[in-house]
Amino acid sequence: MTGENGNKLVRALPDASTSATLGTDPKLDSGSQKRIGDQLRAMYDELMQQPVPDRFKDLLDQLDKVPTKKEGSQ
Image 1 (spheres, helix red, strand yellow):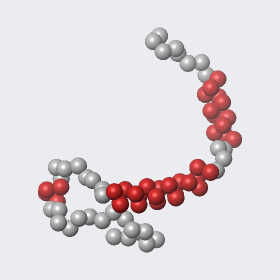
Image 2: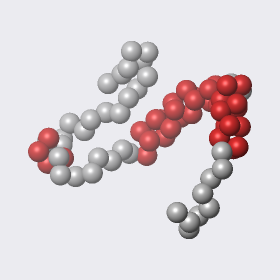
Image 3: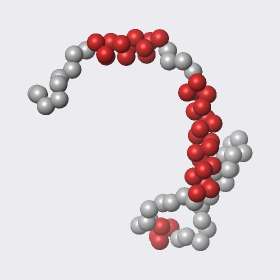
């Protein structure tokens, strides 16, 4: 099975029947896990390199100024 851009996606095992797999935990082989991890890293690497927008920084600064309850007191 391939996606629109030709990337290989997880393949279903043809030997497993649907009724037999419903009661078991789904598992991916290590090659599929690595491929998914590599694709996710490639997709999000560019996003992680971008600076945090000023609006988000301002919101975080506002949250830092809000007094919080100490742990254990209610």
